[in-house]
Structure formats: structure tokens, C-alpha cells
Length: 404
Image 1: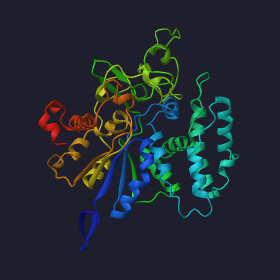
Image 2: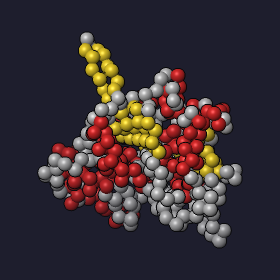
Image 3: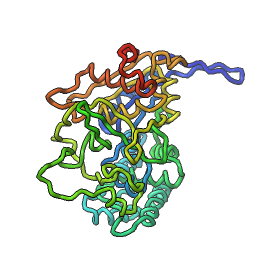
């Protein structure tokens, strides 16, 4: 039986099992969802997933460019993965999973017509979805569609290529409700995700948040895509390329959701990206931080529900995935390092187990392949991020890092 929190109220005394909190991204850890769920079911405890909102690649990048708001792709990926497979006699849950996982054609024109078929209820994807849910989902998608039409300023129009229907739903629900948290709740409810599981954005915000990384050789890289999986074929400059790059002034002539003067690297479309055969970074990543649209360092606060989840957990898992773009972005947020400290930053801590699950291979951000990070390096990177969140002036002190 899991450790418990004792609750008192109205003359009654009852207990609540301590939770499990998992730090992860939106893709790699999906393969472990069933494992985490079995452990939580056995312990009869709540399961929390903490996921960053800083990804500026894939179809999320076009939503960010054209509509603004947080990156929704990783949140959507986990929510859809959590759709229960049991009690699906009429096939509706399977149909919902197909709908929200569906990506439009990679051809922009075909994708646009496919999108119209979906919002007009002509698509075969609606086949096994009940009419009440279908009309609810369509109303949200049409909210987004109206926003896209309103913002269109040809030649600057929305690119539907490879768009995820689930991402479009979350973006539309956020616009409809005015709340990212409410959008997540709506998708969770539509998909019948159990109340014993929570998917928590690391930052609860209606605004876009970007990250930047500092390498050991002094190089700074802006944007998650450039750090982890650059637009194909590589993130490193090609000296033979003669294609002109848009300057900040060029970008400012385009009316989109980006603020004038924003870093061009954060405004560039990143719908197509590659996760394989990427060139190594020239040096190891040493530090990661958040930046505003102009590239200045900022220190955002964590979602209060993330801090509450950590205060009520006895087990914290750092799952598989990209270390510096899936795990660390959640750890460097203000209040997270304090909540993860052995004594809870003076407020007491119930955390008794800290589990790090290593990846099976070295990726771009844990290389270069000639000098890859080892298990101890992973632990040090996590400890440094926690200290950076709480006491940035003490990052270099080994005795402080050892506490984590």
C-alpha cells in the first residue's frame, strides 16, 4: 500500500495515497504509459504527467506562428495516448483516437480541403463518433477555423500541411474558453480519460514560451527545434547554401502572431523536421533557460498544479525522452527546484523515491557522439536544473548539487 496523506474535515478523518509524478515529453514516454498506469493502479494512487509547452516544431509551430499561444502537441500526444481501450463496445473511443491522432496531407492544398471536410462533417473520420460528441468537437474546430479565416492576410495564410487534428482541437478549445487549462480539461472529458490521471502543462499560460541552450564552447541556440530536431536536413549552417534567409525586418512585414522584432529563429516555420541522422552539436549542452521573443532570458513560474502535485507525491520519475527539451524545461521553472529539494525547501517533502529512466541511445542534445553524456552526467544535469530553478547563484557548488 502506498504512503498516505491524512485529511481532516467536518469531523471526519480519511487518507489519500501519495501520488506518482512523471516528468516527460510527449512522444518517447508514451511507450511507458501502460507501465506507469499499472503501478499507479496497484498502489491505488493518482498519476501526474508534467509536460513542457516549449516545442516550436511540427504542426504546433504553424499554430504558434499564425494564432499564438502555447505549444499543444506534446500535451495532445499524451492525452490521446491515455484514451482507455476497455469498455469500447461501440468503437467510439477508437474513433476518437483516430480523429485526434490524424494528420492532414503533407500537400498544403490537399490538407486544406481535407480540413474543410472534417469541419463540415463530411469526413469518414466521424463514422463511429456519436452525434453529441461530433457536434461538440466540430464547434471547437469551427472556432479555430473562424480565427484562421479572420487572421488570413494573403499571401500570409495558414498552412494546413501535416496539421494534427488533436492539436487543432486544443488550440480551438483554448480560444473558445480563453484558458489552456480548460482546453485540456475539455479534451480529457471528451476522451473519457480517468480522473485518477492528470496531464499538467509545466506552465499554465495562454502565451508562447521558448527555450534557449548554452553549449560548452560558448554557442547559444534559440528555440527547441534548433536544439533537438532541426528542420530537415540539419541545424548546422551549410556553407554552400545560397538560399536567402529572412531578416527580422522581413519577418516584420508579415502580419502573424509574432511580435515585431522577435528573433527570426523563433518565427521560422518548422512544420518539416528530422529526428534522424542529425549533425552533432559542436559541443555539449551546459545550460538551458527560457527566453522572451526577443531572446532575453526570463524566469517563468511553474504551473501551481505542478508544484501541488510534487508536494503530494512520494515518487518522482524522470522518464525517457530528450533530456534538455523534455525534462529540463520543466525543472528550471521557478518553484519546481524547491518542491523537489530533500526538505521541500524548508516546507517538508514527502518524496521518497526519485527514478531516472535512461534512453537506449544518445541523441543530438546528449552528444556529441564522440563525447556522449553518461548516466552520471544525466543526474548532474537534472540536479543543476533543480538548483537553477531555486538558487541559481549556487549552481556551481557541488554540496548543493549533491542534495538532489
